Length: 436
Image (cartoon, rainbow, N blue to C red; front, side):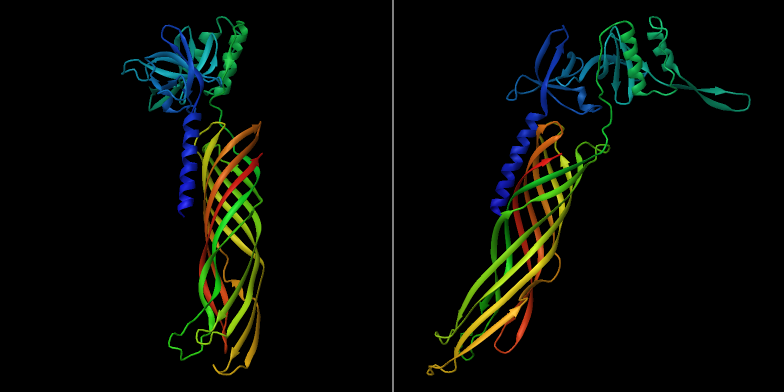
């Protein structure tokens, strides 16, 4: 267990470093005087309130400088996302303040978004796009009237130069706003750039293959010797103790993963299946405590296949190309093709002075068997590694603890009995796989 904890601490430390470094990507800040300074900018998801602070550093080893909207004119990323500092009054009763808004379209006429609100931006002036309502008093009742003032704002900015551009929708829709702003910039022959920052990702299904080496530490029944120190009874062999048995083998695994992008781009549900063979052979010998020349010896073999199905919940630690994650799941095992065989040969003298020995043979099929299907829990740390396009590699370090119940067959000189053992399986494995 100490080795397991140590390996997990190392792996988690590596994942933390990867996460810290890859939360910064190439970017820039624009100073108030118009100068551009390039370096690394901390990446946050669209619409995040944390975008109101720009974390900038020249290299990964530098301490980041934190800028607010009053400190710089704009900042952006190499991937095309950019934000501008604008003066905005969210409430008529409050004073205007400088805030960062993210570009959806950058051009002579731009489209900005702040959370769920949209704004046109032209000549460094902000034009809110809102649907206003007011209460109207009728003859016998009062009612609320909706005024589509956002259409007046749009048409007032685009139609003087481009009269054919009309916004027809009765609602504020991002896709239609983008089309109107694009059409205006094309009409006046001004360059523009579209940043589709607010489009929600759809849930996606992925398949993966993985394999690796697994170290299993499990307990299986073996045979010990019941000793009578008084010497008044013959000592008989029987089930006495358990011993840890370790194995290492290759594990091919297939799986499917469903990314819950509509809920969060950091969540996924996975289901994987694998099958592997376990085989053990134990040789033993018992010498009589009183008569050193008496003995029992033999072998017991136990062979079976475990079919494993493991559902798990997966959480990614960031949204970058190198994406550390951890998974917590269940492990359901089905025991298949189980075989076991016990063979014992005994030579026993009837008296300390008698040279004659009695030879006894004992054989038993099914000496060991699983009493119930094992169920376990698994914890996994891993990271995605980009390869080409949608193909990704990944590495994982996985720990799994499974409880098993064995039924073991004992052999005595006069009667055959069975006993149950509740044992555990601790598995530590390293995996390398590809996801597509």
